Image 1: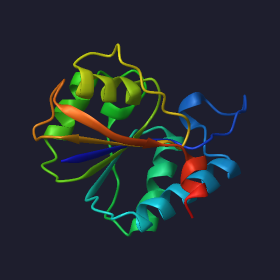
Image 2 (image 1 turned 60 degrees about the horizontal axis):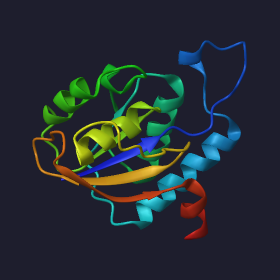
Image 3 (image 1 turned 180 degrees about the vertical axis):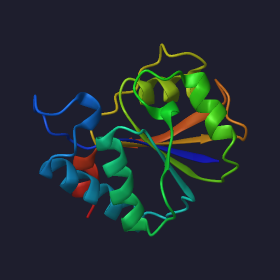
Length: 161
């Protein structure tokens, strides 16, 4: 079962927004449009998009959803900054999907990849803004039972066009 992990795009840095309410910047929107084109060109097998409830992550998920013409995004607190990896895995296992895209934040995304692939979070993967990783795992997902297939930055995706 493929799990794709996407870190949100660049967000507005402003004292006028609480961290949970920061939207994507124009650069962030362009980054995620590149991700959407990449996923559309790549054999898209995604069925469900799960997203953190924070504005920048939801906007990221919606841009990708529109690019792939998928059903509505499912928002979950298990992808919010500070949520536990164990809760996230429980939520994923409740989806019964063959291919999921998870949109969230650092350091949670890299921790989840590390736990899936190595059994703990000591193996660190750097998820830059708008980076996309693919992990292959069996259902149900559990720690130490996955392989990191690839990790690409938005700059790499853009250069593949």
